Every structure is written in structure tokens, then in C-alpha cells.
Length: 231
Image 1 (cartoon, helix red, strand yellow):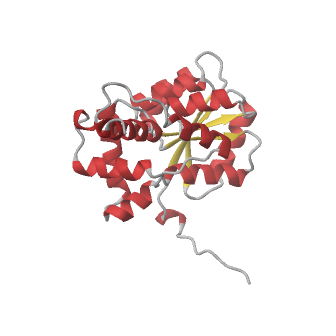
Image 2: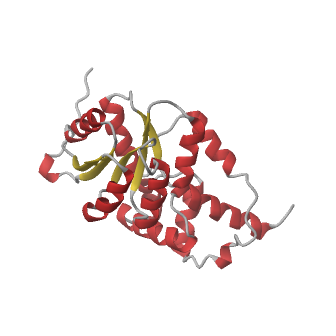
Image 3: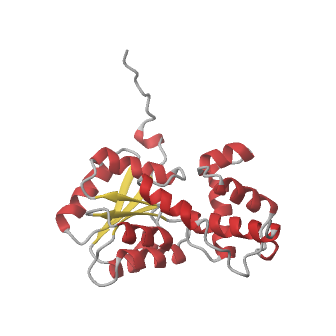
């Protein structure tokens, strides 16, 4: 039995703005074509260096950036950290030739939301963009395991929930974040819009001085553990 999905017309869909930072012209052009093949995506620019991207992305304000890890000059990892500081709500997906776990994990710590291999299929690329827009994090099980292990690092001495200046709603959202819920799931639990959750998360990033969902969840979890004290 065939199942047919009914899609909204392109002019009725929410358009996701995507930027690409890739020094290989052929790969950059290929990613652009993949992005623009989806009616709900629009490519706002392809830049070949991190320096150029950092100068121009603020003017275009894309929701998602496909970022090559190995770039000439400034690396994609450093560019990600700067972008997340500049535009906390932006979602960065790292693009790499092979699974260099140390580099990928460093990129996630810098604020990236996931990663793609350059040999990924067009559908895998499009799905990764949709995943990060919904609050997901496309990555392999091995990298996800390293993220989980990072939660077990000792809390910094100043990580205390009462010192964070969080509102009740922000604390509720962070609680759901530590449970691994995506933005839409959090919105459904709290009976608010996904955009409301995103706005709260942007403010949380500013208050906690972090650049990603993972960092925010780790800080909040550490603060709660610090309040409980040793068993």
C-alpha cells in the first residue's frame, strides 16, 4: 500500500534560509543545488572562507549554516564559535570529508548542532537541515555518546542554578532540554509556540554565556547537581 504525503504549496511553506561555507567550488555548488532543490529551503549565499562568511552572514541572517570544518585561514570550528557568539540562534551543521571524531566533537563544543559527511546523499543533507530546524542534532551514535560523557564532567564552582538569573519558564525549558526533547516537543509540553521556545533559548544562551543547546543543558544539569550536593 502506498502512502502519499500531502505537501503545502511552496508559497505557503515556511522558508528556511541556508548559507554554505565551503572552499571547494564544486562541492559548494553541489550543496547549493541540493538546498535549492527543496521548495522549503533557500540558499542565501555560498562563501569560500570563514572570514568572508563572518563578514556577510549577519546581513543575510540564515537559520542554518552548512560549515566545512577544514577551511583555508580560520577553521570552520573557530568560525562556528564566533557565529554562535554573534547570532546565538543560528544553527550550524559541520560538513566534513571523514569522521575525525576529535574535530567533530570540538565543533559541537564550539556550538555546532550536528555534522554531515561530504558523501552524504542529497536527501540526507536536506533531512539534516530539517532536523536542526526542529531542534534535532544529526550525528552518529559514537559522537552522541561522547556528548553524553561530557555531561559527567565536574561542575564549575560557580555553576549554581540560583546564580544563573533564569526565569521559571527558562528553567522549565532547560529541564526539558536535559531530557533530550526537541524544540517542538518542548513547545507541545508547555503549550507555547516553537518560536517562543527559540526566543527563550536565545535569552538563556546570553545569560549562561554559552553557544549551543548542549552547553546550556550541561550548565543547567551541573547547577542542579551542585545544589543537591554530594550524596
